Amino acid sequence: MSQVPQLIILAGGASSRMWPLREKSLIKFGEEPLLISQLRNYYRFGFKDVIIVGNPGNEADIRGLLYTLPDDMRVQLTIQHEAKGMGDALLCAEPLLEDREAAVYINQVHDVVEDSLHEDMLKMYRSNPQTTYLAGVEMQKYFPGGYLIIDESGFISGIKEKPGAGNEPSRFVNIVVHLHSHAGRLMDAVRAEYAKPIASDDHYERAMDILMKQTPYRVVGYAGRWDALKFPWHVLDIMERFLGRVKGQNIASDAFVAPTASIVGDVLIGPGARVFPGAAVVGPAYIGAGVVVGNNALVRQSMVLARSNVGFTTEVARSYVAEGVQMHACRVLDSIFADNVNFSAGCTTANLRIDHGDVPSTIKGNRVYSGRDKLGAIIGRDAFLGVDVMTMPGVKIGERAQIGPGTHVLEDVKDRARVYVKQALIIREG
Image (cartoon, rainbow, N blue to C red):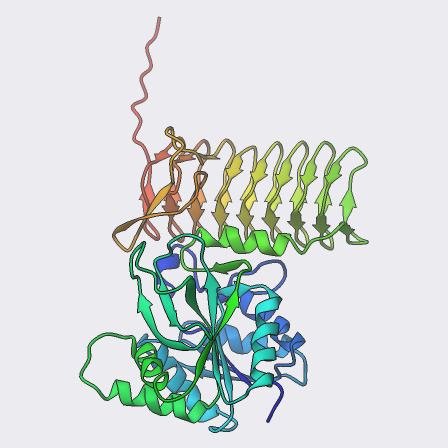
């Protein structure tokens, strides 16, 4: 028995709910995309044989990143060409299995958990490798997910999807941190479900439901923090986790920090960054390579990635700013900017409703509440906002969109759309 099973990372699902942001597995938190930082963490636990299930849209990018991983980490990439469910993703990985009779550890790239969960999963597996283990997040209040049906000994007999408050069969919600004792048995069960004339895409869950009646499944309880990239505002949650890893003040040797600038708390400042007189960086904060923090600017509890400019008197608070973003004399509050956004002078992201309520957003035509009472704008790559633009809480602006000067953006703007206010110029003499 191998002490560490083969790892399958699911990174192929559609990211349509993340609009206007692109592929969630490739969003950078610091210098590296989430996928790579997750793989580095798995490597620390001894996972050296990995299968990644990608999609046609992220295949080239993932292949271009694999060289950055340790030489003794064997990573294979397979592509799920259609979004046909998690079961189909696993069947795409099947030809790359090292041993069909061995165990596999299945995780989703966009689920970020504490190390303790992986430690507990591996500990349980080593104590009894004939059992399959599913992680169960302990919930103190109702969560609209799949609840594990378990007995007093911790054995699982089923999963009940969204039972409704008061009808939960246990306190454990299933997340995709699954350690299956026999890969071939799982794949055969999934394949059998696809052969049935059932329209739903829950083949993997149905396969497990059958296997639970044949082989032992146990819950591994988890009470730690769990963040999942499901909607675009979840970028702020993942950012917060990564900022929590910044300890002390780490300033690159070739970075410039003016004597009259203020660096407060846990702050990382990357190579070639420049923090000018009167500026303040308040931790936890990450300032990437080549970033400029201009005179009298303020960056606090935020992540600003490489080559972005936080111009004169700009405030960036609790926000994620990707690479190459341009800002000048503006306010960026609880917001997410993708690469190369231009946020011109005087622009502001409103982040608070008048009633201080939960900020909603429209996702694929449905109104979804963010769970945040403060949420600014979410802006796609290469968008250009002219001077004095204001965005209302929760507004999303698509890629390459252009917003004219002085416009108040009240609702989402599609990719490549142009939005502007017509003005009548009146000149009266005398």
